[in-house]
Each structure stands twice: as structure tokens, then as C-alpha cells.
Length: 221
Image (cartoon, rainbow, N blue to C red):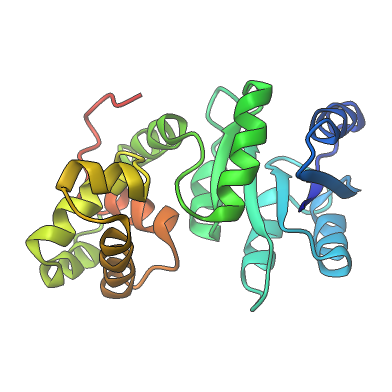
């Protein structure tokens, strides 16, 4: 059973999310929070598997709440909910270590599948949306050439796999593209994370766009 904490200052939104998730046999809402500070307190007390985190909340915003939660040794995954017009603070949420993103106008299926996916840690949530966000914000700042130097340590195969990660492909999809077993792809991904000095595959994709490794001028959505 996947335990979910809802963090949103809109009670109506929380109510809708709770009703949606309650219909799923493998998802259960264990608590709610109306601001970032309460989200941290409730996450610490309830130990959910995933926090659905609104970006803009009073007292403490979702970005700072996310940064606090992802710093814990044993912590829930954080799925950030953002508006369609690309919240400016999404860029900060990326830096804070959010595990994935969904638009607030996502379909029920996307929200449900996204919650499962981000807990599994296998693939980016709503990859087309994530890429759109990354392209938008990467284009507003010069590429981080200093961090890009880390790519010199990647093998040709790892470069190929990292580019596939940046497209939002899962391990199984990458395996089919490069003709490798999924377990071999998983080993390559682990090596990539270590060489880039990033925590997980979501942050590897962030790295790829921030450094200019993944071209920001493509429309992959």
C-alpha cells in the first residue's frame, strides 16, 4: 500500500485529491497539510511514501518544504504539483531535489500513475511536462559549463543512456532502444549517477538540461 500525504493550502483541492486516490486499492491518504511547515511536521510524524506538494503555500512554500524533506536519510518521495503557466519557483524546486512534477490540471490517470511511478523511482513523472519545464528554465540561464565537465568521465554507452534518460525513457524503454537487458541499463544508470554526483535519475535529467548536455531548443513535448 502506497501511503500519500497531501500538501496544499486549498481545502477543496485536498478533498478532490483524497477522493480520487481513495478509489485506488493500492493508494491511501494518511494525512493532509495546509502549508509547507505543516507538510514537514506531518511527513515526519506519518512517514508517507510520497508527498503531493503544492508549490505556492503560506507560512512555508513547497520549495523550502521539499528541500527540508529530501535532506532526511529516510524520506518520502516528493511529487510537486505546479500550474500550467510554469511557476517561477519550479526552477527552485528542481534544485531542492523534487522527485517529479505534475500539472495541477493533470488527468486523474496521470496523477494516480505518477504517484506510483515516483515511489518506484523508475522513471520521471509526466516526462513531457518535466522536459518542457526544464527547457523553459534552462533557456533563461547560461549552461553550467563547470558541471558539464563531469560528462568527460562517461563512456559512450553512458552518454547514449543519459540522453535517453533526458527524453524521459524508463529503463525498459532504454533497454529496447540500445539492445541491452534492463538490469544492464540499471547498472549503467547507477554508474552515471555516481559520475555526475547526482542523487537519482530525475536529478540526472536536471543536470543534463542545466549543463546544456541535453539540447534546450528541442520541442520534445
